[in-house]
Image (cartoon, rainbow over all chains, first blue to last red):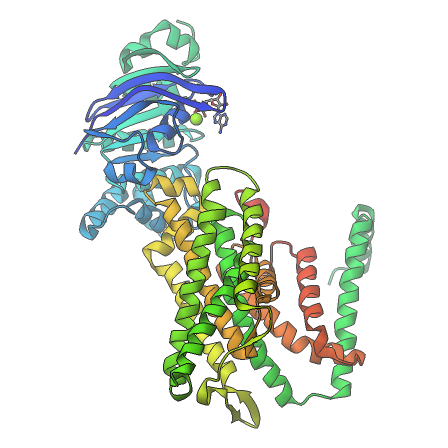
Length: 239
Length: 362
Ligand SMILES: Nc1ncnc2c1ncn2[C@@H]1O[C@H](COP(=O)(O)OP(=O)(O)O)[C@@H](O)[C@H]1O
Ligand SMILES: [Mg+2]
């Protein structure tokens, strides 16, 4: 159920400022790939262009065999591309259960949706007793779990996540990344965007470094972890 | 109660911290309280109105309040989703009311209206709904959709323009004089309960409005479309990311609001027996006031705001103004309605059921 995600020559601009310039990359089916980069590098802009929330200035986006460059966001979701957005973006005045159910908005098969809901609750057992609680009243970590569960409920082929560990305590980061690995092991292709480069590189098959809107380095997670430039710039210690 | 010196201290603290604005607000509060007490007491002493009179005011207030609520829903639904007021909504309602008028005239010409009013009424209401929804879709297409991804005041300006277009087009087509709805057979009669005489049409309008309001709330609570509407209202981008077609939800919102406005226009005509092309302004602004009163963006708030406004207008003149021995208290009903709106805006700007604006995403 996995699909390749291919981005070629992507350029996105805010007015005259090109925040993303000629970015090309490919995520193979079943891979866990990460894009690391400092604040303002253009990570969110790339993901929003992938999902159709941002108009693009140039380039092409392909999901599996379909060119999705000009499709509206809802069609991309239906084709199997889901995003866990930066800052979680839950529906705060809906319950946890409603947030999870609305994740399956594009799906009609009730039995399969129910099975996926059960799977999400196994991934995040804490959510089980919180079904009737308003999402806006959850802790940050719990909100992140709901955001991931909501995206998984769409049964995506490719799941993209925008800084899912931002602002979370270390144990909760572990929990979130373990769940992410479980989702990936279940056959979902994952594109993870992180400022928290160390943790992301640890679990990634491959990684790209984005700097001022351009990809400046690529390699396996392990290679970049050992790379002196990365250690200096993103991991906060000297080589 | 706290000891005397603590209370004095609290008072002194308040005086230190408060500005002249707080003083003015306090004076307004006291003034309102005094007005209500004097007016209410005076009305009781004067004793012009029997319990029966008052009960019939309540019935009328509930009926007109439900109609206000139907109009208010359209304002509040569009605001909830776009954070913008649809200034053409009142005129959507007016055109819907004319749609109902033509349907009623046709049915009356065929003799059906007199003979079978209970059968005809749904047809007339349906005509109002279809016309209202259709016109609302036009407003959305012309004034709102082109600006969906732009942050600007253009939609507001365009909606005001659409309001004029609708009003003057209607004036050109239908004339500016009053137009009377034809008679609805036995529904035109009154009936008696416990010595109280109540016009049948008021009850019919009340029930019809209640059914529509309940149906709408059920749609929003229980259906897939309703859930999508709530999601778009809470976070448009997040809604798109779960696969909701935001553009279609907006279209559906305008259509439903327009249909409800059409119903309101027809029911208003049933109760008051006549309409003009200026109805869009007079009743539209009441619906708008009801939406603000209840807390704009909040659906139950529209209902509460409509009922509170309707009851205040119906009861206020008798219970409050009579005490001041004014010559024609009923002429002052709008003063009471709008004075209440201003009070709410001063003392509870988020409306009766609304949340503070600071809690919302701007
Ligand atoms: N809505 C916007 N309007 C104008 N500039 C923006 C907007 N969003 C982001 N930018 C700019 O684009 C660049 C990339 O931002 P972003 O994609 O959010 O980076 P990241 O997610 O890597 O922190 C930044 O310089 C930012 O200031
Ligand atoms: Mg970002």
